[in-house]
Image 1 (tube, rainbow, N blue to C red):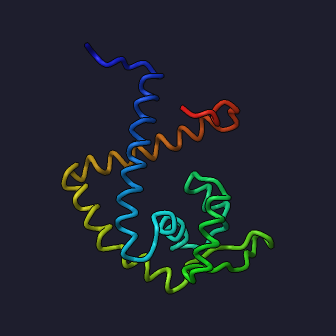
Image 2 (cartoon, rainbow, N blue to C red; image 1 turned 180 degrees about the horizontal axis):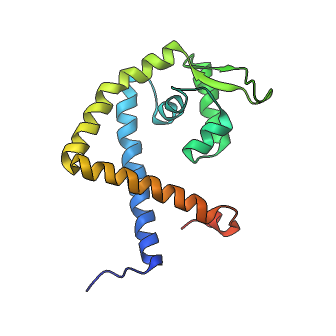
Length: 158
């Protein structure tokens, strides 16, 4: 019997697949980050500020998680000497988070394993299909933002 393809069925299958992927990525991230003395959450927050310092709210928006979650991780990173808060010229109270040299070194320690996993995925999927997967996921995230923005029912889940 063919699989139904109603919009609701497709949304359910997409959400379940993304939840599964999230778990898979968290497991892989924990394994990659552990030898560097990081957790997946620490790596995620440090990774968000490697190029440019950001306020906690900006990191949360970029990652699609709560400001409070990022604040807890950011405070731990600062306490561990992996990141620091700096003044924000655009907003006196919302300090910027940036990695310290030690934080950058920890993330750099992850790079070889990260590159190896990326290569294995590219080889298994094919580089063209891998790039298309990224494009589709980025588009889905953008469209989901657009269609749920300001929608009080969107907070209820898929």
